[in-house]
Every structure is written in structure tokens, then in C-alpha cells.
Figure 1: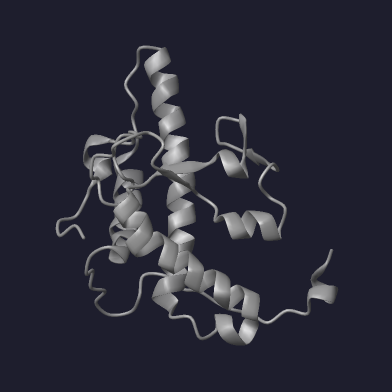
Figure 2: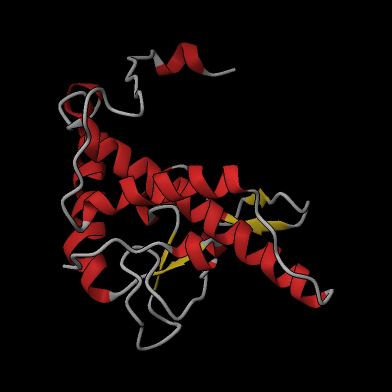
Length: 179
């Protein structure tokens, strides 16, 4: 896979013509994947549920997409989502055995997918007003770091010291967890 970091926040490149993870040029705008895995949307009946965006507009879970090359999907995203799905289907004892980096990558892909869609909407809205899209340097730095860590799916990324995230896996009694 790709050997150099892709840095979409340097140029605010959130085009559907480039793979969200590798930056490689796509053959078609139809090369896209859902932000939320299909199995997750099916399991929790989320596909057509409303998803409120920062600008107060509404989308659905299934409408949230990411441009993704076939190679990135086949070699990185699909195996990750298959592993997480298998663990979730098999329950808590299986989920706690999933390496923390995989759980992070899975969660980060969804978080980044939401950000990607939000930023695209912001860029379109500002363009319609003939204004430049401005994102604070602090957010650019934070989102860039998230994207770099997510690229650990397709290239070696080293983490020195303690990991820059915490994931807690808790066992719940589903019957008592209902509100």
C-alpha cells in the first residue's frame, strides 16, 4: 500500500475523487463505502434513522459515505470490519481479545467519516456564499493527528510511549442496560 502520509488537512482536500485514507485518485465517485458498517446498521436498525449534522440538517446513517479505493477497502477496511463484526457477534469474551489498535482503527474510521462529511458540507456552504472555508489551526492539528493514526491501517505508524487514546470494554447486562 501507500508509503507516504496523506495529509488532506494541509490543502483541505475532501473531494470524492480521492480515497479518504490513501489520497489516491479514484476511478469513479461510485468508489465509496459507508461510514458506519453495513452489519452495524442492520444489527441496530440504523440505516434509515436520522443523523443530525452540525449545521442542523439531517442525513441518515446509510447516507454517510467515504470515498475509498478498492485496494484500501479490500486490503484494510473489509478485513478490519470483518474482524470487529466477528468479535461483536461472539460477544464480550471475543471483543476483549481484539487488539486495542484494531478497535481504535474501527472507531476512528467512523469518527473520521463523520468529520469528512461535516467538512464537505461546510466547504459547500461557504462556496455557495462565495466565502473561503476556514477551519481553526487547532482543529486542523487535532483532525490531522487522528487521520495520521487512522493511516496505520495502510502503512506502518509507530506510537511512542503510551497510546494517545483509551478504550474501555465493559460487560453489561443487556436486560438491565435498557433505559
